[in-house]
Amino acid sequence: MSVAPPDTNEAPKYVISCAILAALALGLCVARIWTRAFPLSRLTSDDYLIVIAEVLSLAGYCVAAGAAIHGWGHLSLYVSPKNEVIAFKCMFAVQLLWIIALALTRISIACSLLRFSSAKLWKWPLWILIATHMAISTGWLVVLFFNCRPLRSNWEPVTDVVCWNRNFTIVYGWVSAGIFVLMDLTLALMPIKLVRTLHRPFREKVLIACLMATGLLATIISCIKMTTFNNVYLGDPLQATVTSSMWAKLEELVGIIGACLPCLKSPAERLLRRIGILSDRYLPSVPRPSFVVSHCGPNFVLSPVDREHHHDVENSDTNLVGSETTDWKSGTSTVVVTKAASTGTSDT
Image (tube, rainbow, N blue to C red; front, side):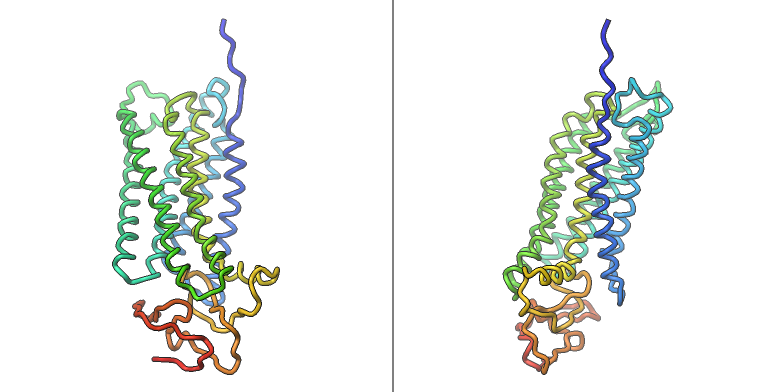
């Protein structure tokens, strides 16, 4: 007579690890919107997209926690049929929320990068990335809703269920995951060119680069997630899905964190000045509508203070940090020679 396996619970590793990053993502998202909305609203499409992504992400975590309460993470042997149905319903909802939230997160980052340059070589890759992600996410929605018929077979036993070949889902998962890794690398590395052209102290360039490079962590997590694909259909369905779901959720949360961190550059700058990491001789003397890397929140040109000559950037539209003049009303940009903040004259 065989002995029943012990009742183990895998859900805590999902609930605890994702709770930490979920709280961090929520805090950073709130801070981003606060700095963008007050005292003067500068909210744009990428801000709204990341807010929707954060709401869906938080909802997804709460639903996953509900699934854990009803037995997700345990062996099916120790879960009542009623709780098992509830757990599978919750996990179906988690997948739906994850697909949409992940897509909105990457699209939000791409939309913020679109404003950095009007060059076709800059914009077209981003538009292709957005279109590709929308197509892949639509494909996952099709898989989610039509992989098995009837739909209720996803959460309760059905005798006449008909499903697609599992190899199709696995191959689609590998292909889409590979494309997602390439997207994360692209979104993380594209701003490096802009950081190199900034006329700012080296320490500040390092700060900006670190804020923008958070996407590399999402790339690493995506690669780790891919290692779980071969075990998707193996083991107990209530317990075996915890690990892959955890890495998928971490990928989403790190993406939201990476989208919000660059927008908090100014508060981070002020904090680092207070503790002496950034030099005090570079003080905020000239207000700008945005800064060349993130276009998020009120930021300032770091230049030696000249109280006698104040350059009105808002009126002259001169970008003192990079090498662009931007028409903030029309959104057009033309290349000009960078001028020092202390010249006291404005070319119009």
